[in-house]
Image 1: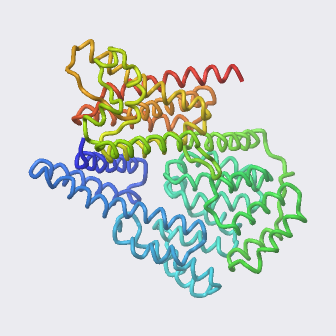
Image 2: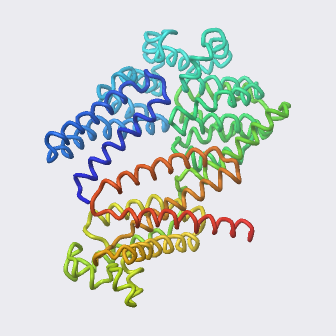
Image 3: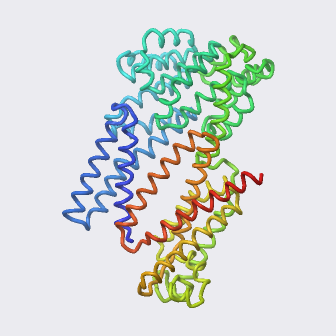
Amino acid sequence: MDLDRILIWMVCLSCLALLLQATRLPLRDSLGWILVSSFILTITAATFYFSPAWAAWVSGSLWAILVMIPLLGRAKVNRLFYQQRYSQAYKLAALLRWLHPADGWLEQPQFLRALELGQQNRMDDALKIFHRDQNHKTPFGRKTIASLYHMGAQWEELLVWVRDSLPEKVLLQEPTLVVYYLRALGETGDLNSLLQELKRFERSLEKSGDPTTINLVRMYALAFCGQTEQVKQMFEHSLRIYSPNSRTFWQATAEMAAGNAANAGEQLRSLENSSDVVTRNAIAWRLSHPGSAQKVLTESSQQILSRIGTEIKQEARYSGRAFPGTKAYGTYALIGLNLLVFALEIRLGGSENIETLYRLGGLVPQLVLAGEWWRLVSAVFLHFGALHLAMNMLGLYFLGTFVERIIGIWRYLLAYFISGVGSMFVIVLLAVRMDAAPQITVGASGAIMGMIGTMAAILLWGWRQEKSRVAARRLRTILFIVGLQVVFDLTTPQVSFVGHASGLVLGFLISLLLLWVWQFKD
């Protein structure tokens, strides 16, 4: 296993994942990613064929410039946008715009510039930009028109425009317009339509690839229906990226809808002095159109509202994103122990010194059968080189924190050790059965694959027992990752396919058993 091969695999897998995701988006939003991913894959294959020594360097450089930098930059722009830091978002978007011009990035800086001007109370200048770019026939033009209505809190006019000018096909392909449309329904008090339309557009919003979008419109539904506690929880978790002013505004909206008009009005008026003109317009509208959750929801709408609450809880459970304050002590302890053992390897002769690994307890099947059973455990904490350690610890951090949060520290540690030690035992059995020559094996890879198996068990349980769509989607992703891992193992020398596969299966089976016992015991 060498760094060049791993880098090439990372580049190829990343590009394939982007191509797969692009198939779910409209062509105008994905053409650039399709072209870039296809170009990198083609160059990588050609370089690997004609000049293998340069393949990793060439593919890695292209991937960093055309994929990694745009993805990280785009995520940063979105974060700044959600936090209403439009000036910084505008400057960054202006730098990124040329990397993916085919995906509509060229127009984005002007949109952010207009929002920045509006935030600075320079509404005339902002409106000049928006009016210049109005065009019903282009996605950016439609987004501009919707933003004009939003800035002026002209929700009734926005609804008329949507219903008269936008066919359903356009709304299905442009999530931003759906967000404006659903908010307008809530702002005008049409709660039943808000919930029914949210149900109708939910799948298209999920396909947009941005979880913040679907969570935002769910929050609208909860706020306008007076679900104060759930709105608070969303801003503490899935929508924590938003600014404190946005949080206060929507919590006050929920309070008002729940009938606490006095408290809500006080919160809204406290924002007026520190807000831009757009937020002040929204506050003025809210105070003059308080709305009320006392309006009767149909039985169908009540079911949708209940389902939204359930799915938000499931999203929190199965999303894989740890909440603020979550402490994965078991994962941190395992990572620390692996680092300490690695330091010991270096101190006693080097992490790539076979003799050192042997003395510290590397797995040798013949010695295990001769009575040195402790090697089944010690080998799980030994690693051959810094790259081997770094890859395993990175995987342990991301997988372990999720698993530990779901099933608890003791079940997590039990699944980890059974997967790691069990995979080592399978290697011993297979080596003896095949009468293989003595060979040393080290690494936590079997235990890490066991965590993937545990994740699969958790998600399968959530899908079957709770009918969770979030769990079903993530389970498909896990199965895709497992398939890629199998291909990687079978094509990469010095990687133990047996250890990985056995760890995966053991993690899956023991976790299913733990979930079954836990479920019926509790």
